Length: 156
Image 1: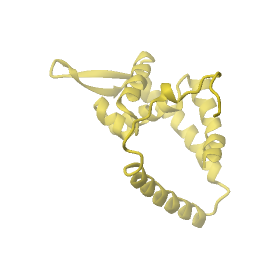
Image 2: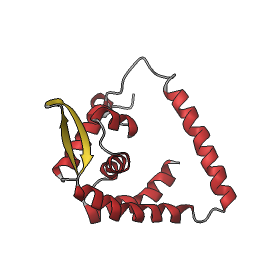
Image 3: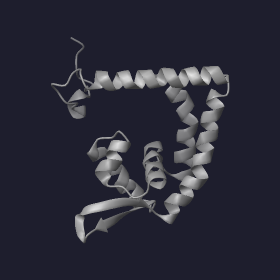
């Protein structure tokens, strides 16, 4: 699955980053905001399946690129909704169909029955992965800094 994701995703990455100056993750969050309307940062992180800190960094990058804006609610800066700007909506309108075409091209070698079977298989695997995720290795959190090996580490 990783190889398929990498191969099928490479043209999308080139298109997003090379032609439009956004990462695939940034575009994914932009799509959620454009399609769903203004949303709180915490809800956006849930919808995107990102931890809040990572979602916050992506939102900040999108805001710097003027693709989204923070709409403060009730005069309290702690309560804001993330909304797409005109530029963000225009980017979505231009880029989304191109990505959809790439994805359709990837699955074009499958007939209708195979597409339906693939969809069902992916749904089953996703539901099971959610169960596995909520039941295994819950006693520790990821520590990406410690998880990196230095060149001096031995393979003892």
